[in-house]
Length: 277
Image 1 (cartoon, rainbow, N blue to C red):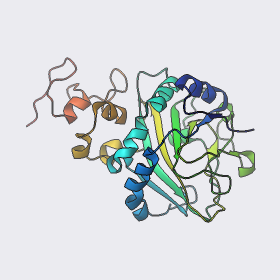
Image 2: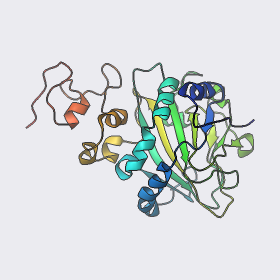
Image 3: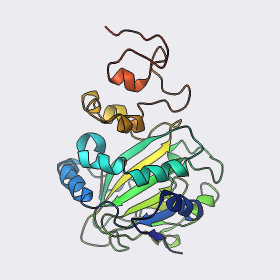
Image 4: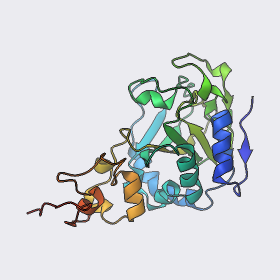
C-alpha cells in the first residue's frame, strides 16, 4: 500500500483517474518558487496563531487561515490551472465548484498522530453515497513531508470504505513528498496528520474545493474583508463564492448576481435590480 506519485507535467485527467482509484495522489514539485513567497508572506501570521484547543486540532499544531486576504502568493496556489482543472474534473457532476477552505498547517515536534477521519464529516456527518465525491482537497508541502516529521497519513482506496469506521495510525501509510509538491485527496479518504517525531516543524498549505451547493468550511466573505475582495480578480472571487452555486443558489435580494453586488453594479442577471442608497 503506497501513494502514487505523478510528475509536474501530468494532466488533470491523470490526477482525477488516480483519485477515482486510490482517493489520493502526489504531484511532485508543482509549486516552484511560489512556495517561498507564501512562506514569507504568512510567517508573521503563523507566529501569532495559537496552538489548537484540542487533540484533533493538535495541541502542538498551528492552523492559520484567511490565506487569500493574507498572502497574494497563496492566491496563485488557489488558482493553479492544473489543480482547478483536476478539481473540476473530479467534481464534474456539479454546475459549479467553490473554495472550501484555506489553511496553513504547522505540526510541531511531539505532536501525536491525528485521529484518522474523513474531511467530509464536516458536513454534519451526512452519509453521502459511496463513490460520490463532494470535495477535492490539496495539501502543498512547504517543507519536506516525511514519515518522521508528520507527513499526512492516508489509506489508499478507503474512499470506497463504509462510513464512520475507526482506524489507527498503523492502518495508514505516510504521503511522503518533497517541498513544493502537492497531495490531492478526496473528502471521503480516511486520513490524518502524522505524528511529528522530529525536532522540526512540518508545514503544509491546505486548500480545499467543494461542490458549490455545500456550505463552505471557511467563511470567505468574512475571512476576506470586502475592501480586499474588491481588489481581486473576478475568477478568484467566483471561486470564493461570489457566484451562483447552481440556478437559484447564492443570489442577493432581488435575484442580483453576488459579484455584481460586490462590485457596486446595479445590473442583475436579467432582473430588475435595487439601487442601493
